[in-house]
View 1 (cartoon, rainbow, N blue to C red):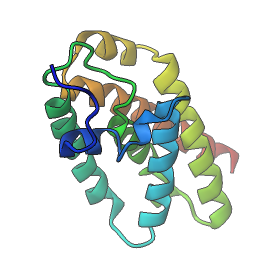
View 2: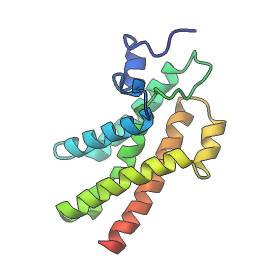
View 3: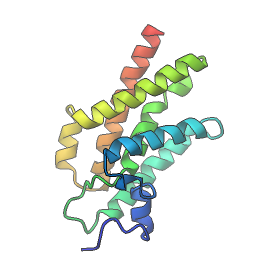
Amino acid sequence: MQKFPNLKNPHHFLATLGGIGLFPLAPGTIGSIFGWVIFIILSHYVNMIFATIFIVFLAIYVTNIATKDLLEKDQKSIVIDELAGIWLAMIPVIFIASDQDERTFYAVLALVLFRAFDILKPYPISYIDKNFKNGFGIVLDDLIAGIFAGIVTTLITIYLI
């Protein structure tokens, strides 16, 4: 079994988002915040629907390879799945926010709710987290947390703002 993560290995480098996952306190939250900031910046220049689809497939591929030889598959230092999940949670802001105040409200609420769903792991997130120990499963639980966060944030934004 190889040392994980070895940041000289490109799969480990990407899985940890360049070492962000090595942050000693709450690496998943730090990875989510990093992904959130990158989404906000890129959304001014890039079609984020296509970018998110690309990141989801990249995350599954990279995580699958990076965890191939690990006993504990869902290492805390792997945070590319958080990036994919928060990007999925942020997609609705493109369609529902009509001004900067709504975009800001949506973005902050989406981040908070994504972290809440990812940490608390309500069903079916908990089921996937426990039963799918491969690259797809590691990313899928974050994608479902992102979907939940996106739906709840969208409803709150529509009905309260």
